[in-house]
Image (cartoon, rainbow, N blue to C red; front, side, top):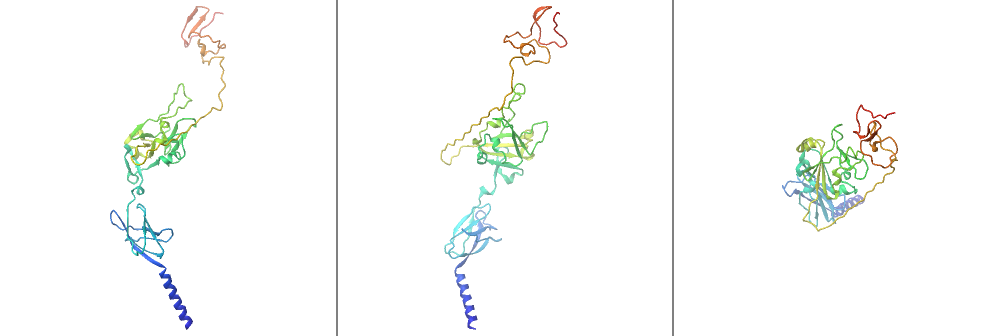
Length: 327
């Protein structure tokens, strides 16, 4: 009997000591703007995994050790707050809204900034740090792999133009390039070259002239709703470019970033300089001759010598006529 009594007494003393080593902290978490209870707010003992969430009334009750010092209150869309416990058993907290983390801000048509949740269409924004993280030589190259549905291809030559497609190719005959808008002003991004004399030379397009370090953000607008303001020009999407502007806050600083790109031709075609380039018909001009070697003399265009009529001049080519020599 004494053994049973001693065992019960020992258990009671142990429970009393265990209770004395912990304490219960309770309270209510409210929103600072509207005073409404914050449901599902995480209340956690700093530096541990001990925690609990508030109920439908914003109330909580958490058992912590006697030596606990700080509670951390956190909720999505609100600023986290750390509160010293001290000797208190009831701790009420008022959390403030975190507008920056609540919703992303995107640049829409005419450069108007709106919340991403309020626009109702697909828009992807890439900031300056993401664009320049890979030290891309051009702005368009810096967007590769950073926007869903954006396909970028280039010829690979130095300063060559890039082809940009948003959500794939929409036309086999027309242009599939999106409209570029810089600070609200549409920009032409046509290919630079000459189809007659420079058919094989790619001089690039105007998007290559934009310095990536001058760009604050790039917003890609997709779909008809996003591009309705710009009409048919934006049928393939819009790439909105917002450049950096001066800020009053902070100290004056200068940041330099530079790169040099060089390319070398691996092999050039073998050429000859003894004969003219030739034409598929008779031509009296020296530079179009398939005849004897060029001797360096400059002949008058259309000059000829005819054994029947003597020297004279005729146009370069008469269809259906043939100049004949006297046998």
